[in-house]
Image 1 (cartoon, rainbow, N blue to C red):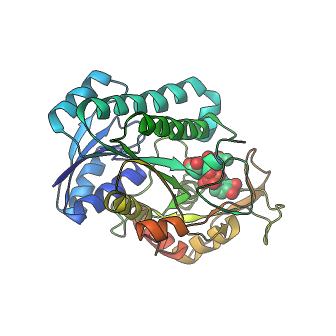
Image 2: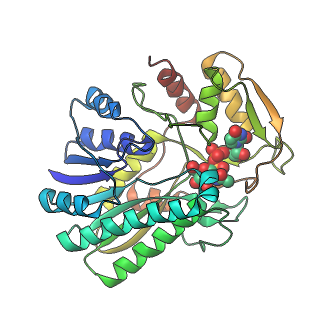
Length: 334
Ligand code: UD1
């Protein structure tokens, strides 16, 4: 059994990855999470799905001594690092909080990895590191860091650079950087899913709250873009596919150094198509209106996924319709 530390393991992508790790059978999972944007009951739901209970440590990664104690005691084979603040708008208002939290927590983990001989980190990065690019399939070798519009995005870029320096300095370390496109959906059991504390920012959680009547209507941010239906196009990936990408990264990446993979589907879907897909899955109309463009939005963003396919033997298999079906199950959980 390989013992893995999963930071942010009660969050949306983290919890789905923990499920895949436990179901694979080869991993013992320790979760560290401060529950800033999740709930402890997720641990019970993970146990219901897998029949196994991950070890849970409610602690903050900024508490360096506590983290060191954990590394000393638990001797991790790898770390999968999800934890971080991720609200784009909030990051513009509170840049110092974002830099402090996201950067220092990562540095604390890397220091522990160095001290206690943990050689691999799989890091949750984002397509946002590609910055201001449009309507081209994004490939991992493209330059990053130019035209990022917010501190959240810059923390992802900066952490990627830190990981590169870390691996240059120590030839026993491996960093696998996974650049996520837009994760949606949830586990087919409907037991876990995306349930942010506070007001959501991303399209899917907003659609979910509109359908529950908790938000009156969805504002579609612009329908006058240069796209077939005028609304923005994104590469929406089912979170279970994304979670399986982490397993592929753990299993297929060998040797020291930095490995970077896009995790997307390679296919774009517009906001209007997302609304229609949700309406088809739920069987009812989703109240929405056309609103002004949101600052910083790019018309079309999607991945080239050949590298992950060729090197990790991984490919997304779920469709947007699958994600919508699973979302409805999660909405009906209670
Ligand atoms: C956003 C962030 C990105 C971050 C990602 C994951 C911006 C500009 N980008 O990506 O840095 O990595 O989330 O957290 O914020 N939309 C609406 N109405 C809404 C909400 C969204 O029409 O109420 C549209 C947006 O214009 C966009 C699409 O839905 O076209 C997806 O939006 P969102 O879920 O916020 O993701 P991104 O903008 O792709």
